[in-house]
Picture 1 (tube, rainbow, N blue to C red):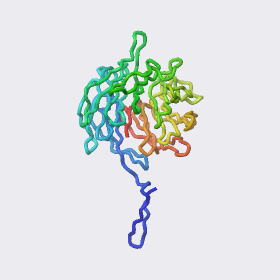
Picture 2: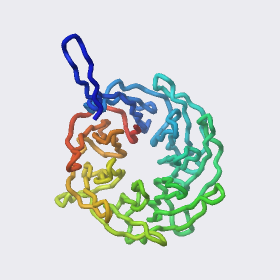
Picture 3: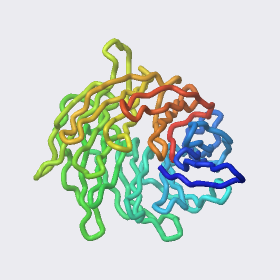
Picture 4: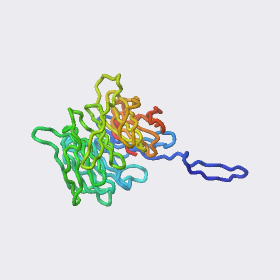
Length: 355
């Protein structure tokens, strides 16, 4: 904790800076089929979890997934349409966005975008097209034309690429249609396929999103169709499956489709979203073995939780409930990892939250 003594007359005031709230921006990606007009910005109080001052940052079509540039001066979005686009924006001083570039995503229905650590490349996942596309990032935050496109479709199998993440020289790609997580390796500034499946998949679980530990030793894959999480450990010559856990409460018998997954800041807990049960599944994690155990299924206080996010300090978890048009805010117990509902705000068709 950071403290400072202030002398005011005969009084000494001890200020605890760790308890002073910061107001940070939260950008919200949406579908613009109904009341939404594009990307929204809200202000988030890091001490109370309060959301306020919602405003339209830019009018744009179906900005369903968002990410920042490495220096956080620019923002990128997918535009999830049949034609498929991605856009880059300059962040203005007032938080509004100015469109810089809009380029083809090289596939239908782009649903996810990520950026590498040094901010020089972005990867876009095209769910409808079954492709993942790589774009160089210019120094002014704009995007160059596509440099690489990987097509996962075959004559017999339809690909649905759902997410991709960079990790050092690797690019991992989750393909819901092909039931596999691919691994690409960077060589001579281009990515080459290393493995079409880092672990063998049984049945039709539908890997959708995944979370990687900071050291790259473990990957946690959330399965849309299987309502489950597959835990994977890095080995000397590849990866191995070490665990497979249901995301659902034992008493729940209805339909369900998993969506998003995130590790806590200290990596002691893991969270996944259930669309149908409409819950966040909470798991405690053993750091050294990587294995997980479910400890809570918390109602999202809404319908159809898509993406969710942890605030920068890791004290709160926010859920984008697409069908009920609200963002629900939960506090995180630092000891147990469990969630407690605090409040909600209305937002039009929220599907992605970006701190």
